[in-house]
Length: 224
Image (cartoon, rainbow, N blue to C red; front, side, top):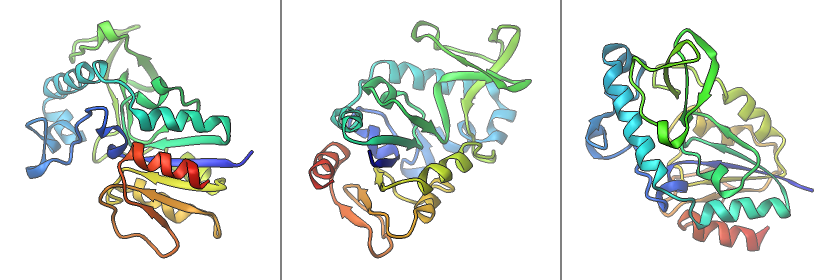
């Protein structure tokens, strides 16, 4: 069974109603991005950051996987599918995908402030956190990779990309690093597809499918 490796960005979840942080003016849901998505912002005002991510969890709980998420899960019938996502939502998992690596963290998880290895999954009814929240004796922070922090899962992601028989990029502008660099780890001769309604410039040889995630995945499934 061929290994199909898929890298997804914000466009993957857009059809589910998940807003992206790269809005005009550097705002995400009316918050300055660096106030709520950076290590400095968290150090300055952890209460604001906790409130922001609690609001994002409330939004996520009311969203559902879209046709694209479901179509990727169905591809597991024909391929060994590995998903590397920049998204912090859990829509891939809720659609049924078995192998998902999150580059930028997970919204429905928090981790201990004093021990990064202690990660806790929040129940939907307990999605609100504050700097005073304690779980199993630990104060916690959002399990999110902030700007100015390292991306721990990038090296495992590069190994997955190197193993791909087919590599697919979906719904990303290819400007967020290091995620955008994954394309450069594909083995020579490996078929590469890029699905996006407004695709960025890509190297020669990349097969561009100008479409939304759900439309593009349907076309991809027919091609491969």
